[in-house]
Length: 111
Ligand SMILES: [Zn+2]
Image (cartoon, rainbow, N blue to C red):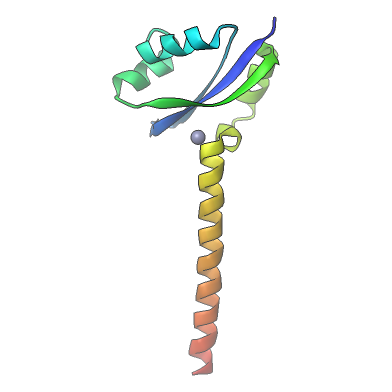
């Protein structure tokens, strides 16, 4: 059966969970259930904890095997556009910092 696999990003992590991957044939209805806390157990807990979530990615025309494959990857953050952008920004900052430290070390050795 074909449906949609969707990725939800939490506004802040709950324990180790920062995302939710689900499959549905009726995505809008499913999301309404999630928001109301009547869908998946994890999202019910998220809603109760006052954590917001947003739909960040949808794969159309896929079955539940596809959902299983994504879940088994155990690296959901990489699939998330928000987290991937943050990761890239952190990476850039780290590289810029190490460049800066190298050049200040070179200067102090020259002095
Ligand atoms: Zn994310």
